Every structure is written in C-alpha cells, then in structure tokens.
Length: 425
Length: 82
Image 1 (cartoon, rainbow over the protein chains, first blue to last red):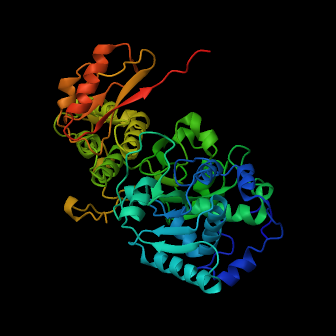
Image 2: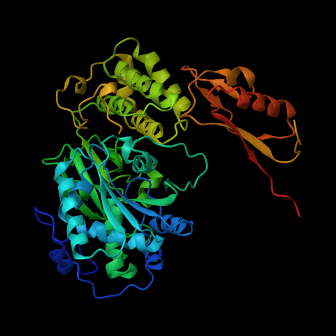
Image 3: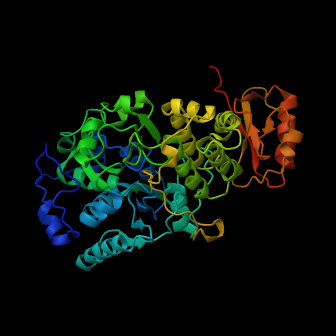
C-alpha cells in the first residue's frame, strides 16, 4: 500500500521496464474495499488529465445513464502534443494501473468493451500495452473485452471525437457536435473517452478510496499529476508532482532554467505565462486567474536568449499543418496566422500590417471549427501577444532581435510533412 | 410557410465540416450572415426573435439554398410563463 501523503503515486515502483501483472498486484496491494466506485470517484474530485479538466465522475455518470448494451470504454493514450511524454512514460512503467482504471470505469458505466488507443508511431509503447493486455486475457477471460488500437499519430487524432470516429470508421477526423454535452457513439454504443493518466488515477481511487486520494493536492484539485518539462532543461523529463506545488519548484525538480523568459503551459494549444507569474501554484484553480490552465501537463521553458515570437511562429506553423482541413476557418485561417507571425518574426513585408491582421484574424477564426483545434492555436497566439508585448513592438518597429538569429529552438516541433503525406486512416 | 410561432427565438447554425464556402447564405440572408476573407460564413450568434419575420424568412431561404446543406435553423423555445 502506498502511504497517503507520499509521492510517487502514479509512478510508484516504476523501473526501466513495465511492471508485470504479478509485480503490479504486489506493489499496489489494496487493503480497503471500495463499495460504490462511482460515488467514491465523485468524492475524490478527480478531473480529467487530457487537457479539458472536466470532472471524470460527471462524464462517467452521463454515459452510465445512456441506454445501450454495447458500451465502450476508450483509453486515450494518443498523446498528440509533441512536448508531452507523460502517457508513454506512464504506460511504459505501470501499464496495469491504467488498465485497472479502465476496468473500474467500464464496470461503472456498464461497458463490455475496452479500447486502448496508442499511436502507432510509438512501437515500444504499443508493445508494452499489448503485452499487458495479453497477460490479463491469459489470466482470465471474464470481464470486458480488452483491445489495443493503433490509430495514426496526428495532433487532432487524440481529440475525443476524432478518436471515436477512428474506432467507428477508421478515420481520425473530428466530428461536428453542435449540442453539448454530446454522447459519442461507436456503432450504436455510447463511448466514454478518458485519458490514460486519468484512468491510472481511477485505478488508484478504486484501490485505496477517495479519502486516501484527497490526502495530496488542494481541496478543489486533489491528487497528483504528471508533468512533462521540455525546452531549456538539462534533460526533458516527466515528473510527478502534487497539484498545488509552486511552478518554480516544479522547474527546480526538473532541472530547468530557473530564470526563464516565459513558460508555455498546457501544450501547443495552451498559453504562454510570463516570468513574473512563476510563483503561482500549479493547479487549475490557482492558474485560472492568470488566464492559463494545466492542460495536458506540458511545460515548455523558454530561456531569455530565445525569441518568443519565433517559437510561437514555429508552433503555429506546425499546428496549421496538423489541421484536419475539414473546416474552412481552420484550414485557411491557421496558415494565414502562421504567415502573419512569420512576417513579424522575420521583419519582412510590412510587419506592422501583419500585426494588425493577426489580431483581426484571431477574432474572426475563433470558435468556428468543428473541434477546438483552431481555438487552441488562437489561445496560444493571444497569450504570445500579451506576454511578448515588448518583443512584438520591437519587431514591428524593426529593431534588432537577438533571438531571431538563434539556431537552437526550444519548443520542439516534429518535421513538417506535406499535406498529401499526412495519414488519417 | 406552416404555423409561425410567435414566442421564442432562433439562431442559424452551420456545420463547418460540410460547409465549402459557396457563399449563397451571405446573399440569401445578409442580415444574418457575413463572410470572412476566405468566403466562409460568420453567423450572427445572438438569438433572433421569431417575431422578426423577415429575418426568419431569409434564414429559411439560406437553409434551403445551401448547396452543401450545411445550415440549419436552431430554435430556442422560451419557457411558458405560468
């Protein structure tokens, strides 16, 4: 049993190879028995770790109330964010904890299928998960059917409607959902989609109960979370922290630059946070007044030597290429934003007009896609406009910027693929 | 035109996946639809009362005139006062 106030929880007993089922059950031996899982989950106050931060119990209850005898529990380990490594770290250390959580959730909603989705571009994680599933089915064939699915790795393929679309119809494209909440369906069966880290947390709650779970973290945001720290760090790492830890001490734990220019929180659809806010506590409740959120647990550290506009431009350019090109405002708007940003960053072709256009286009594009992909990019651009105000005015005036000439970039983006080479099926 | 309800309101909504930017809606319902620089519709987001017959009629024209059938009128019914 893990002691109530101690870390690590999710990464408990982690070594360089995944825990086998027998070792997993020894490491996470539970003494308490949880009677009503859903009530316990509600009492724990767990929120989703995939980005939106929606209460997991509410979502599970919504699917539980649906009719249908072929419900699906979908574990989302797609990890579309290039800067995020938490799900693959978790699945390569404790795959059975995630599967435990998925089985608990499946029993809560009455699902008889569990689909674990891992991007096919990550063969080692696919292997680990495949082996864990094999171990479970060899031990017992009772319970919901476990299946491993390997959709292509795209940024929007991890979006829940795109993932369900892939499971339903082999196309990783987001769906149009005008009325929220929308019940996603595979065939006729309602599907509950939860991030892999959320499932692992449910696994802990199912074993030890809500009271144990709430012994870490704040009252509004209990528990611990995995954070991927990249950028100006010695080594890109995934650390497990208690929610409510000051941001500066997370950076210190990860061995990051402690005097950065800014940090990118949440992911590539997240927001920049200026260096003056580094003492804020890392949980959604404290981050909300500053206008950011923990998102998918990504922290990209930007040192003072770098140029924030160039970094933002590179991210937006890549995000524009990752658009599914289903909706006009996203397919045409995001490349236009990237182009405006590159005019400002490289001070070419009237950066002043590009700056004005950029602000206008943000207002035009916002909220007009089927999914939240364009909104995330706009959040990033707006936060850049706010945090790097001085840099923007310098660039527009045409003064020299040191960071523009730098060869090293801190927000890593995968190499751009041509549109016809993008795989969606 | 069928029964026209006096109470409640409507908004015109577009399915952005179906929409290909033909721009018919902006011509058929100029009071509800503007187009952006790429020709895709920007719809008025605040509800229009159903008593505004002209706007409702042009919304119906836009809905039926869309070559991709991407538009639909979403009715918002008011709760009846007791």
